Image (cartoon, rainbow, N blue to C red):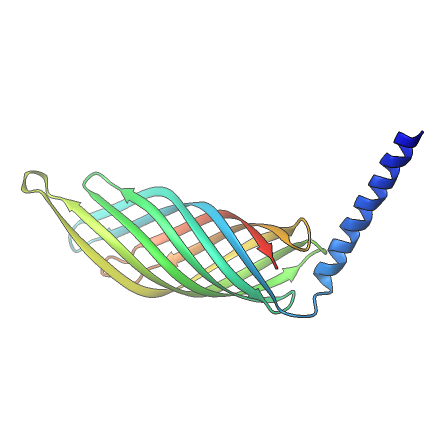
Length: 190
């Protein structure tokens, strides 16, 4: 009997905590700071018709970010992206970047929302071309470009969320490379 009462009390307490967590998410009255870490897969491709070369490979990426959520609709975040090396038959490239983005969310329920984001990416790339018997040449390139994306976010509690997102980077370089990124992120809101 005591065991049944204890389980009932625990169930009611958890239900109350869950409802309180959802109420806190929707009734946020001041800006909140959050941080997160993500893992994803990306596709890197370009076509250089002038030199009759093309490149297409997929690899992994990691990112870390910090942001400010001003209300349930608008956030601003700063991120660092580390894109693992991609390689083709005789070429390889590695890219890192820092981005600043605005995120506009549309809450669907108390704990689920969809969002769009856009911003600026400052990137650095190391590119190496294998020349066969002649060895190889390498070059560094950098730049800054606009990017955009969309995603969904689910809040487990007022402090713990998970995101699934897609981002598109079109880097303005001589070869106009494109990067498509699909990632999952876990974040903690203070």
